Amino acid sequence: MSGLARVATISVHTSPLEQPGTGDAGGMNVYIVEVAKRMAERGVEVDVFTRHTSRALPPVVELVPGVSVRHVAAGPFEDLDKSELPGHMCAFTSELLRIEAARDPGHYDIIHSHYWLSGQAGWAARQRWGVPLVHSMHTLAKVKNTSLATGDTPEPLGRVLGEQQVVDCADRLVANTAEEARELASLYDADPGQVATVAPGADLSRFTPQDGARRRLGLPENAVVLLFVGRIQPLKAPDVLIRAAARMLEDDPGLRDRLVVAVVGGPSGSGRSRPEELRSLAARLCVLDVVRFEPPCPQDELADWYRAADVTVIPSHSESFGLVAVESQACGTPVVAASVGGLRIAVRDGRSGVLIDGHDPADYARVLHGLIGTPGRLRAMSDAAVRHAGGFGWDATADRLLEVYAEAVEARTMAVSA
Ligand code: UDP
Image 1 (cartoon, protein in one colour):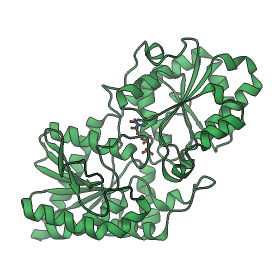
Image 2 (cartoon, helix red, strand yellow):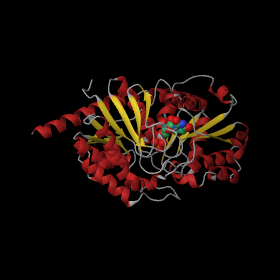
Image 3 (cartoon, rainbow, N blue to C red):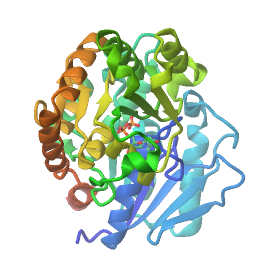
């Protein structure tokens, strides 16, 4: 038990109530929900502050006992692009401070902000409330800008500077991987002692191997199923899977009767302005008949997609961790992924999946064809995948975060009393 009673979690640009896998909702939303639930189970109350984006939502929504989502009025209810949010940060921050002051001043023991915009609000709250600020970047603009996909616009200087300000003011920074911790130190001059590496996880009770998924999803038992899951945008490179499938069919036309490429997710980021792009690409490459586009779905249903797949493919240009990789492996489905960022930790190369350097569809086609052609290897990888994923559970993430919070509170108490 950490001795902490209440956490203020800040997630300005995306709400834990949103369906992940489309728009701005993804791994960060899942992270916040799963960690908050486990903290509540451990007796720590969590309030998640997010921007109020719909008139239909009440000011406070209880997610589970001990976890509430508190809507902060800042900017219009209607669609507001993430890029416009910096203009509403003053409103968000003022309202956050007003809510706390009106309700119960001194309510929170710690602030945990997610993504740099939330860090900006956390910065002011830290000063006003006199409690430590723990911050998770989730992605770093400087890293993202070195690995842009074709057609993606670089992250603006305002974000780079905003991230730097958060690094400079936060009591603790939480990195998903040791690599991210090193990037925070080398690119943002973070003090290594300020950075804690805490691995994210997967819901290991929901993501499990189970028979019958193909029947439930209406997929033939003898199909070869390749799966992409996530927000559809150039950074995630779902086009690499479509191109690789086209190549596989060129080399092995007999596969056409059995191949299913399932793409689960909705448009996001720069993909929002071109929602039909992937479908057009599949049509141009004459593989539309094997591609099945599925809208984003809740995780219980998603688990069946992982179970139904022979391989999950994650060709991302940049990935701070890659929850999809762990979830897939927990369901017993090996992962073929780009060797970038957290995927190098989330996938055990050669054992629970295969990591590929670069994004050449020919490389993906070769590896995928090799795997589906050797069922024995795929089975061994499936077993190893379940074992590997077993090392990443949200319980461990929540426990480690509570330790980080307790360290931050202790350090602050000592600094104040010195
Ligand atoms: N997800 C989901 N339903 C979908 C697609 C994705 O719930 O239809 C979830 C998925 O389970 C995972 C998250 O969205 O937990 C994506 O996280 P990841 O770290 O892979 O990518 P990010 O969105 O953070 O870039």
